[in-house]
Length: 206
Image 1 (tube, rainbow, N blue to C red):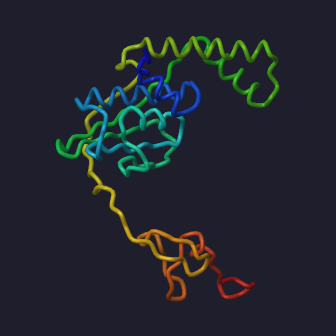
Image 2: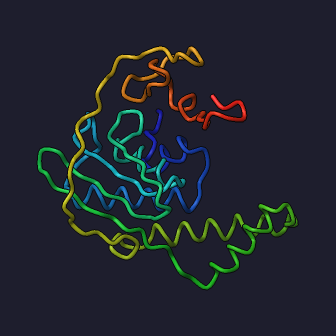
Image 3: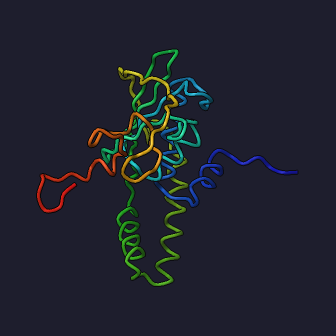
């Protein structure tokens, strides 16, 4: 018989590997669903605003069902581990702040990661990094949610649901572009990359 994959296994499969960042997103998603008393989103009932583009975001997409492609995940890359989740019908929102584990081996882990990333680590050091990483994940998942996530209810203006817009042809590159994203240049629609080619009338600027 085929065993159904756990939510964590699905997150790892989607992301491609296990790591602390993915685990943080997983627990943030757990905390959000628990606080909102909600299940995984199906059709944009839930909205997520994520404030970084780290590994955590992949776990949040898998566990909450809020995705960039579906239009109910909004990326505001502030470089912060802050995440806001809101329910449309209930008009309720919570902000989840991730708390990173601080243990005696964290400094050793960070130093090893730097050596591995720089290609300076020995095989023994690479193996030690994997072992310490496994220990860190096990310890992190063993902690209660309230110890790794700070959750508070917040006011939130819900964005409208994602819409399908017609496309227009960029007069510069000839590629199709969503109408709201197009700009006018010399009276013709152009895509954003082509619109940004701006000159002041000298040096061959367009």
